[in-house]
Length: 199
Image (cartoon, rainbow, N blue to C red):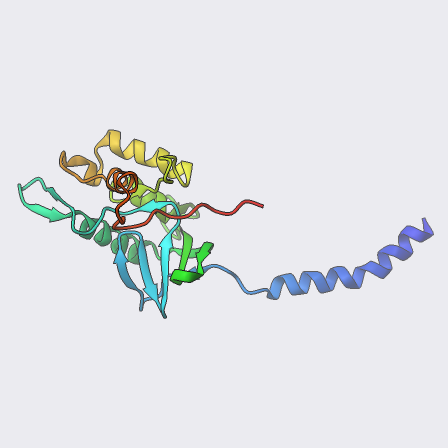
């Protein structure tokens, strides 16, 4: 009993120090800055770094679909507009998932927390929001498997509901274009997100 008491007394200051350092550690979560320059429907840049939503593939710029009014629209621009709108409305905070130093690209997950209304306190994943609304797609690996499986489920739901871009019969599905380009061995317009390294 004495030893356990003596050990507890000796270790107590260390526990306090560890608790204090844990409280002062900087958060790795960061907001999308107001100065961000949006590049695609899944990426933006700031201060020389490109930030890309991990596991999300936007529609490709330069590809087009016919909207409900019979007008041709750039599919990549539609994805881009939705990313800007959701980012500004939700004001998510992002977390580094992976990095590609050679291209100065950081892959991120972004999450917003509702502060008012019936959904107060609920969390909204930006990638899921883009995909579920039909303006983003689940990124695929070169073998056709999803980079992040939950996003693929959200895509299937959006596709079945004909949400967003899925409502248009001639929507140029970006993963089909990217996978075909990879099979043909020609440069891809937009690379798919890399896999997370597993320990």
